Length: 148
Image 1: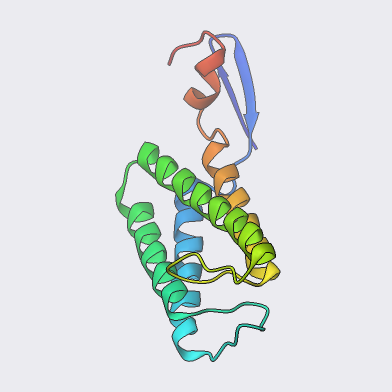
Image 2: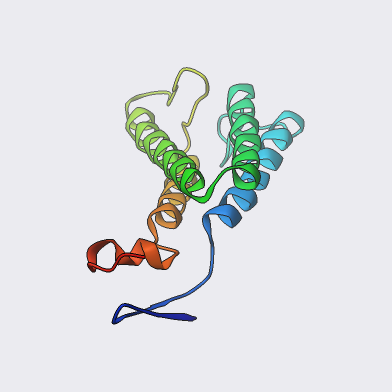
């Protein structure tokens, strides 16, 4: 835990899953799952169905996450992570809506199985939570009339 005193304001915050760490960890995870999708034979009835389009999207998002985590500034890492989290949330909600109504086809790939949609929902919530969680004192000082 880190305690910051500045301008009469004291804040306690925990260093944990930072934007950079989240981008690197989940970028690597998405890339590995995307590559594995080409080698593992999945059928539409499996718990996680990885078709070619989904594997390509996972690889592209994974590599983009790794590049953003290593090369971008902190502000842009947060923006990218938030957009990626929102993308996974929208994908999960569309998957839930379409799987109840039919085949779960999102155009590029299908998300017909509920476990896929739950995984996308949890990933989206986690990425958005990390992106929106304040990390630095200046993130806390926005509403406190303290300028740093």
